[in-house]
Length: 203
Image (cartoon, rainbow, N blue to C red; front, top):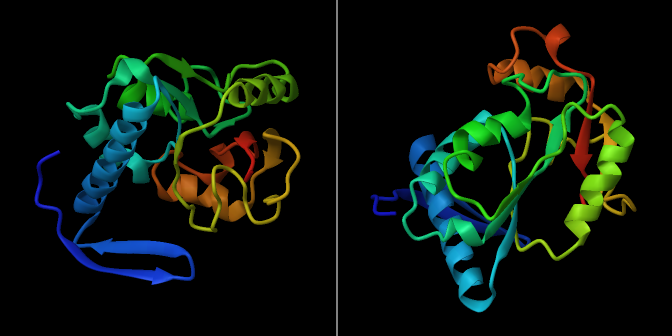
């Protein structure tokens, strides 16, 4: 990816390294460039990459840049996503599988795409099925965002468990998380945002 990546500063806090960029678009391209490098380096030492992607408007610039990459061998990449609502229709634009399908998964020739089934009649069994898929081989790269209340995937502070024994579980979404979905323009009002979701856990 050839672009002038303007970094304002970078620091290390404990073990966290972070960088600050001039604007959101530049930051998204920089993140995508870093991810691109990770994918290329991983594929240089093994036959395939298993990746998890997050879905949110904050990821738009990252996903657009990745979709435009001419260095990534997408037919060697197996894709997963992090979370999915319970209670939305299968074609709802707010669904995270649908979000990733329109922005990346439907634009590049992936080896496989593994969706949490938004229309599953038994979400608990769907969590078990997806957890088994994740466990088949190690995950190489996870591209995640951090929500307004600190959530990772849909692990809101009240339900986040760093020692969780489940790989995927059903959670109730707290109001701050649900309000973020309205703030992001995904839903018109809080009452439209589902109250439950399936999510990969912190582990």
